Length: 321
Image 1 (cartoon, helix red, strand yellow):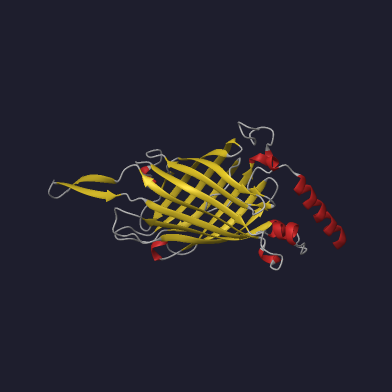
Image 2 (cartoon, one colour):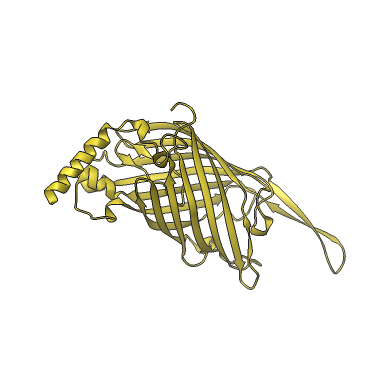
């Protein structure tokens, strides 16, 4: 049985090597499959659907604002226009429950994006892409804090597999790193709110500054499928032979217009299971510091590879097929 398994894996690798790169639509560079990560965006262009991504976390109390339990269900759809150019659309339904207050619910602002994959090196399992995200102001509900102004975020996406490491360290080859670096730029630098003092009847104005925000994130992952197929068959049974343990880190830091420019973010350890047509993901959401939140949250995702599900229709680029 062991000999049969070894021969089967050799055959799978040989068949994989003969596939044209155009058939490997989502997240491939050489032998490396880059999965769709949950907390950070991907360095590739593909046809895919995340339905849903469920998140539960708690914000930290700040000043007069109480700690709030945030629950959300998000949908994200990505479509290739050409093999290297894609667009995306996302929306998120949120439920916010502050301590001592009633629950507020509604959709956040619509998010649109465009991404261009400008570099792929199969020998070194490397990817680079550039993108621009647009959070459409006033498209969501003010009850859940959707801003009335738009935010534009130019972003660099990167991915690097370590299959090109020397043979003396074979068990490091399944490692890979993906990540993003971008700056969120609001279309409005400040918002002025005018209220009437109920005791004096006088008008009072409050100005809220909107800074540019550095946004960065990365994911360190260890691909057990890569270990099995490209390094050594260690005899992992299903479902472990399709799992990818990972740790994602997300960071944000205001760059201007506000006095408090401390970094916030989360550390997200978890695991992905990647099948032929779908991917399942589960992560913990751990605040990086006290300002980032309270307690440990969770995130789960069901992700569909449309390029494999519908290779002759909606899973193909619109141009340059």
